[in-house]
Amino acid sequence: MSTTQKDIAARLNLSQSLVGKVLNGSANVWASEDTRQRILTAAQEMGYQPHAAARALRSGKTHRIAYLTRQNPDTDPRSEDGGEVKALAISMAEIGYGLLVNVLPSQPQLLTRLRQMAAAHECDGYVLWGAEADIEEQGSLLESLGVPFFVKGYYPAHPNWMQIDYDHEAMMVQAVDHLASLGHRRIGYLGFTGSEEHIQRLHEGYIKGMSAVGIEAREELIVAERSDVDLTIEHVERWLALPEDRRPTAIAVGAGNAMWEGIETALARHGRFIGMGPDEFGVCGETHWPYRLMFGHALGYARVELADLVRAMASELIVPVLRGSAVNPVVRIIPRLQPLETMDLRKHRVVTADGLSHL
Image (cartoon, rainbow, N blue to C red):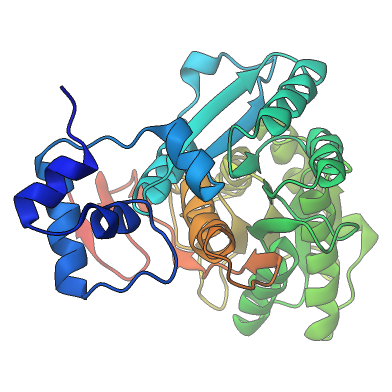
């Protein structure tokens, strides 16, 4: 037979009422910290499993959070890391919550599932993760149903939504400022093409950063493109062919690893490398982990991971809301620039920008 609250109370010589209130997380229950820990330890040792349905009826809470996303038809789901799901599950487990994961093949099916879950009060909150257009519709539905939800992304049109994302605009301002601090005055921009909010914010951050350091953002040095090595090589070669007074000496990157690889390849064809010296070609901005430069040195956002973002979502939004605390609904995180690792093929060793190396 399964362990009951009565069994735990008998073992500890405490009242069943006190044990039940502590295990159920009831508010305004008096118990010393030592007593609480004795109850929780005994419950764990005795294999106590609370009955979820009964617990929800008593407290009005299910002690579950749902994570919902739509399967990308262009991606094999078996190849995805899923690190953000694991990070969220761990964060929720730390406060005694379970995680229900729902991956639906289409937006209509996901919306139907949301309606079903909300009607049955299956969870205390919902985490929405995916494309901005999908989340706009999903969030609007949950908002109309009056249930708590949390979204990954930045949605300025919905300032009351619980939302979290990296501050892409501030990141690019920081990248441009770094390049300007190295003495660069002709700084190009390589970014993604698209209408998504974070893509627009990266571009706006570059423009804002250039203005802040008193440099003109010239249209001929701005490229919005899909992240592709060969396309990047073409753009960089075109820039390098410009007259010296128009030729960029640095690039702010608002895209992925393919653009970094394309920049390095184009420079290598001219016997040049990315560096942070006064006469070297400077590059700074986004990268996707893992990534190593082939040659040279640079700063970048090397470890901006979704798992880190979901952990911040849990600590800054989900946990406080579940506990009834007031929060700022819009959280934007500015990561710090870090030295990128370098695979120095000329010396057959791995080196980092701070001068450390190993075989």
